[in-house]
View (cartoon, rainbow, N blue to C red):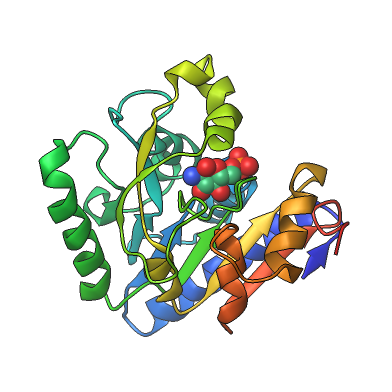
Length: 244
Ligand code: GLP
């Protein structure tokens, strides 16, 4: 779907997430949300916070799994995805801290593989992701699945693309300070979600959105794998959709 503005699109996505949470609540069940970071979802989270404050939307029955985290990364660093999620969502709602899962950027190298397997298992224990929210990087990455990622990849340690590190350099005060690696859910992990919504706004994203939606399916643009699934929706503003 294409919306006139980021604002409208974000509200629609937030309302949809709220519906999932409320449906689950009505059935006495847990809602399992797959969440993303970056500038793109900020307004979605802002709307969810407003619904908590003004409409009594509760997150007591919500479990969240974030897509990714830089590696190495201390959770209390201001660039960490832990800090990002706290600042934009978790600090402002009634979610239980023990229901928040974000890949751990402080692990020893030799413990990462085991952590990743457990991350996948945890998602499975909760019955899988009810919805996964995705942004898209200019390399065509989803999560931090850079070009070359396999369509059946699982949660793992990856090396970041140069363009991804350049795009992140502002947050880190220079590309040389951007970690070279990250822990990310795999494309296979993302595909298991019952529903996937990829969001993108602005002219900056129009060319990669064109490739993701209309381009040949290729590992060079991991987001093209989303064309293989029926559970995927692209929610765009008109700038991001301008090359379609
Ligand atoms: C980072 C995140 C991605 C995100 C991408 C786009 O690389 N790991 O999940 O989609 O940035 O970021 P932005 O929304 O700021 O354009």
